Length: 341
Image (cartoon, rainbow, N blue to C red; front, side):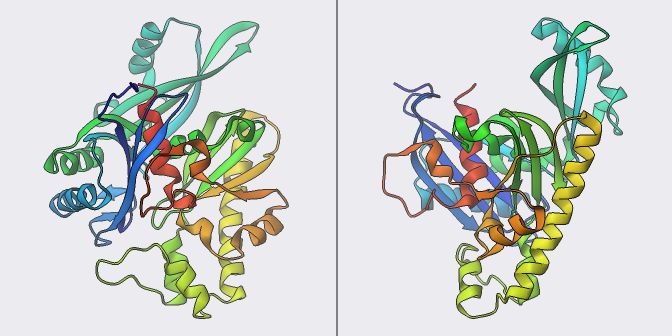
């Protein structure tokens, strides 16, 4: 029997205008997907990583659970927006519980928002020495309570139980095979609304931030709009088939994305005094734009590849969702997080 028994766990991504979910059973060694799906919602219901309309999202979650035949109501919720902050800090080596207490007492020194307004979590990502003293490297993650609360209310509306709340960019690393995590990599998730980048060294996250570029911007430039209850899936391909996605549009968008990636990488290298990035891995719906990965590689002069989420798991059932598509990287990575609890 798997860690979650017969109930499994569901990774849930709340993208602008789209909900995505993947259900996993098994354990960390042999995870397998039993259900997956996505559902369109009005763009003003979820935007920029924040639930704006609790009732609409709650009803949509109920519909998604039925449509995708999701059996578990245990959820790993992904969150990331402008109010989610990440800081890499160093602390003297302490036992886990004492480290937790010390972080809560001193978190205010690293955050521009009062700690009373935030929900805090942390992960130990490495060890170092400062003046010959052993130190622990900690990634501190803080989310504003008010914006997190609306997402939790939507889960409560649809009778779902959050077992973990995770920063979405951190979930991306879990869909990479171990050999793909080596070196310094930049994982860039190009979502419909809230894109992100996470920089990692040998599989350990070191830095993450929101990217002010989105697939929504690209499609709007082409005049492509989603209508009715249809899914966004296929809009990029439809634009290409209709001849709308001219090379100039793709090149302009790749230049925008490349500029934001360079800005993030340059800041990271200055702060951490580390080496250049070895390669870029793309995920999210935007990774499917025809010719985009090749143009981005040309712009950055770095190897660029597209994530294949299904490579991290086995799929036990036939389903309508295609887990080879990069748009499912976040939700699958979140579900894998549930197996670590």
